[in-house]
Length: 300
Image (cartoon, rainbow, N blue to C red; front, side, top):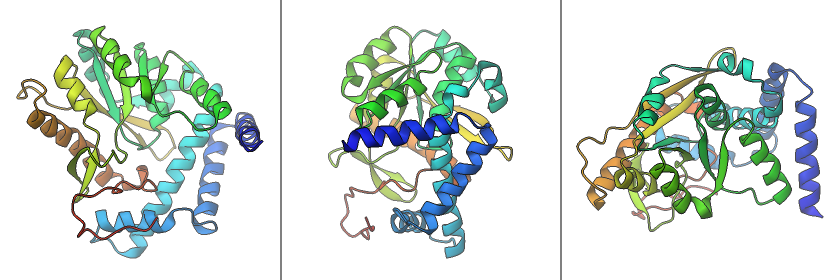
């Protein structure tokens, strides 16, 4: 019964938002984020603590402003995803301006496959959905299924609004290898806390357990890693930033090379977060695992 009620709420909110203009949807997202941040304080202590660790020189007021911005970004992304059925092809290039599309198109044309990576930054959902359609290149999106089957079906329908397909994380290794070997594009987010057995690289000033799979697959198949990000403009629409992660000096998937490449793509994400900290998902417990117990524990 609980799962059914969750589905009804999600589907009902989505249907309501789809009746509204996009700017109204964004306004409702901001209002909802303000309510959660100030009234419910869901994960606010964790969010503020992680921001203070990453930006120790910022005053408390600045930290709280970034934290509120992070909540607004998350709710905007969720509500815009719900609004996706109303997203028409002829508006895509108005909403998503790709600054350097040739970074992906040229890499794709080489035939070795492409690994498009991002973080929970800006609207990561429309990054893959819109860019794929604008460029005419389908992406295979690695996703973590939503725990509610009904909601998961709706979310995947939104994610495949145009030409993309979704791949559950449990099936991702085989699917990634097949897609890259056939010259396709795999899109994924790899900025959340990895298992404690994973490698640790520096992230925003502290060591963080990090997925090594993207670097391993890149070095094994020859597929380049391209980092992609949506940066929200003043009008609410997005500039899409693309950046190739260099691999020319790395020969083969040795453990050292995997670490180096992982550090490089994490550094790109880190730089984007430093420039637009409110765009990132600070609500996630990024430093869940640490190799050094001397690091101060963060609140749950």
